[in-house]
Length: 153
Image (tube, rainbow, N blue to C red):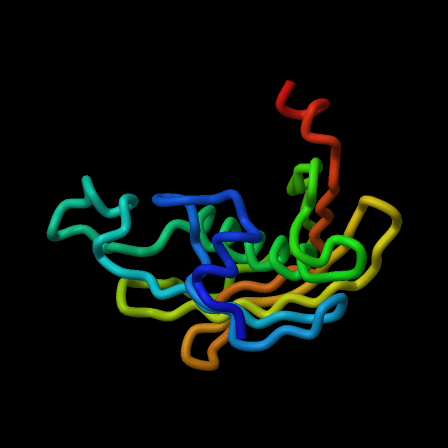
């Protein structure tokens, strides 16, 4: 299990975009299970009228899953402990499907597996569940490590 402090040490994200609360299971280089509690106090709900359906945005669900994949990447092999002078970029995803809606009060449980690693390119697969029900799954996500000077400079 990873504490919030360890998650914050591995990811550069901070409020309001740190979308992983806890890692409950991890096998570095193989798989990870992370959780994110959705609350009505999320910034995405700030301007939602009281009579509006407060569905959690799919884009934030994907971002939260992607941060879980980044945590798995940060735990594996020579990257154990972080990415050093590199930045992890979300490249693409294939065969992504949404199976249900997420609402305030739900706890997202992201299941991420590392399928393949080719140098600085990592391929993941996985799903997200709420109370044991699948709400999102994808066959492949590609994340790539790139020198921070080339990306940020």
